[in-house]
View 1 (cartoon, rainbow, N blue to C red):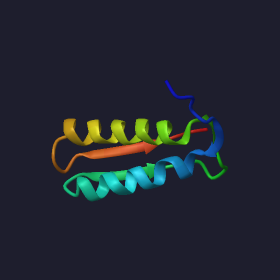
View 2: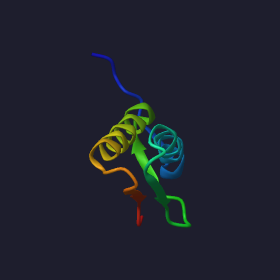
View 3: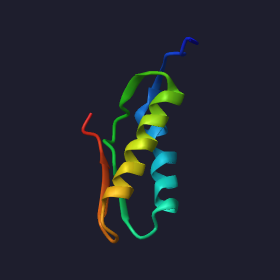
Length: 76
């Protein structure tokens, strides 16, 4: 088992690319990203956190009807 690197990362940086990729993979859905104006910092492994967000968005795409809306929201 390998150790994971834990870093402080801005949540915005962790979700922008996965949400953009989800929009490209699911153009028949409406994708919305709502983030607070102030940065939200999370502590964790960047690769794993991005993987979690990507998987959640893929599940949302799979289980949301075409033309349905998928929102990513964080209130801080």
